[in-house]
Length: 208
Image 1 (spheres, rainbow, N blue to C red):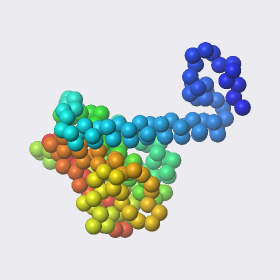
Image 2 (cartoon, helix red, strand yellow):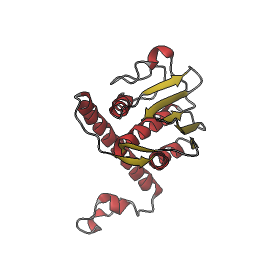
Image 3 (cartoon, one colour):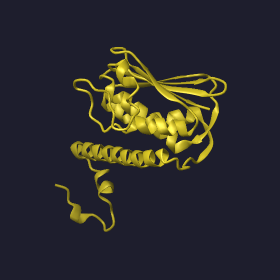
């Protein structure tokens, strides 16, 4: 048991546990931190979905280096890929534009798409984050090694509380992709999926 009674007043539990030498305790702490962050993102997404659906102006745009943004998103979800025994890689054009966008919102779009790919990609699989400069817009996508999405479900997965349905599919509430669509459209972009059953999926979005 942890001798928490010896902790200095005002010291948080996380600060006590982070220096603990018991790996079981450290693993429990890391799981708790990831779960808390995931819950926060889910609540934030639900609130943002409501605001975006109501047409509220909520973008805080500034010029952002797209390559740097992609690196930030991948760094946030890298521990999940490592835990799942997967590999995250980049496939980027040599020159990527600076894009006028809400940095926090698009980072959340990217992390949602990559986390989604991690859920559906088997152990040992590869997830590729791609970005291309198309002149008047940037094309960004996340490619996975998952089971693919049936064509009759591809038009529904961006709706709230809708998920790909098949046996042993990962659990979830179906908010991530709904948020992604609303966030991308708020930036005057578009988002869609290209997929065939048994051949993985590529989630694509554009930014002007």
